[in-house]
Amino acid sequence: MERIFKRKLYDKLLAWKQESNGKTAMLVEGARRVGKSTIVEEFAKREYESYLLIDFNEASKETKALFESLVDLDYIFLALQATYHVTLVPRKSVIIFDEVQKCPLARQAIKYLVKDGRFDYIETGSLISIKQNTKDITIPSEEDRVTMYPMDYEEFRWALGDTATIPLLRTFYEKRLPLGAAFRTKMREFRLYMLVGGMPQAVNAYLDTNNLQKVDDEKRRILKLYEDDFLKIDPTGRISKLFMSIPGQLARTSTRFVPYNAIGSVEEDKLIELIKALEDSKTVNVVYHSNDPNVGLSLSRDDSRYKIFTADTGLFITLAFWDKDYTENVLYNKLLSDKLDINLGYLYENVVAQMLAAGGNKLFYYTFPKDEKHNYEIDFLLSRGNKIVPIEVKSSSHKSHASLDAFCEKYSSRIGDRILLYTKDLSHDEQTRLLPVLMAMFI
Image 1 (cartoon, rainbow, N blue to C red):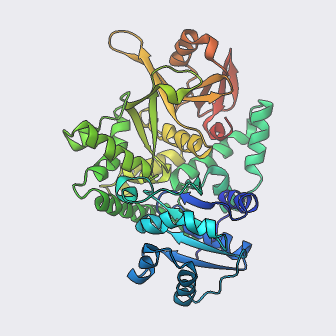
Image 2 (image 1 turned 60 degrees about the horizontal axis):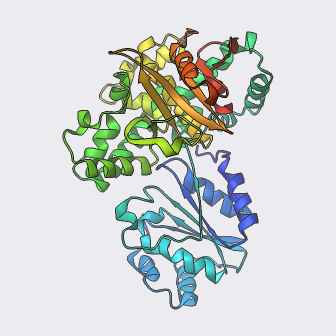
Image 3 (image 1 turned 90 degrees about the horizontal axis):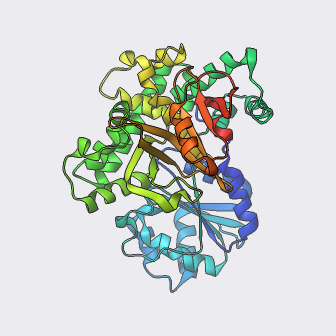
């Protein structure tokens, strides 16, 4: 059974419609299969008298050709209404350009269509900014942009019919109280989210079957689709290899992603282009090294040092065992029973990256020498007001945080909250807040 899941993006679209009143188009970016088209069409059905959806994956050459000349907009609107059997009503209808990256001229036309003012426009797309999708067009300035992520933990709980858990967790977080007797249950529910992930198809499969093997099958279909997409952008297969190497790279516990391990030698300019395309696909979260951890983290971003996480932790778990049958995927059983090996801690880093990104944070990390052979590492740095918040992630119950302590001593005047995310209940340790990993969404 296909379900329409409640998504937070809906409220953002509603705010745009009311505030913009036709003065801008809305571009919804996001990875394939993240639910962009579904939520946009649902929004159009509910909030407009009529809507016209052009899926540029399937649109005819004749439809795409309409955007080659914008001299006669009346003709364009007539032709679209005739083709799609829809009556458009001025100021009461919306036109959706689905997968707009497949027709760059349609995206360029937004400037003139918005100026015309008759209808609202929503675009959806992935790989919006890579060179081949923008090289011959002028990007419209009349375009608001929003990123759609995989379902966050609250949306996942909504899908399971639970509207109480997240507000409850937020109250405990704000009052700085441990969950106590409820902790084990809440962590088990959160681990289920890590396993299923936030891709709507995977969540749907879980609700239909309650069978993690069926969920895994759906995730494999999505990953295969990503692989096919990457091959279309880069037929040499290098983007695909970079993506597929993410679990292995994180398992090495290195202080950075080493692309050459996956794709061999490649010129620096080409490597930057490949990483940019991977990042633009929205299938990953790239965490950049900040060379000077201060409030303006972006100012000291090091483009040559980064870590790459998958945008959805459920997909990560399937990707980690891509070459093996589901029955060999020990992560499912280990995670569910909370028997995760300590060397699989990168799973928790991945889900924290996912939660922080969904909260609108740009992601940074920091390393500095401990001695000649070892480094301290802060997994995530967030900017809050005129202070920075360092975050260390542990997959265990250990409360040790040597990196956090050394960092806070080194940059004491810059530190706001200092946080250890781990797999036990909320606690305090001198100046450090010890939070269960499921509270990362509130930071």
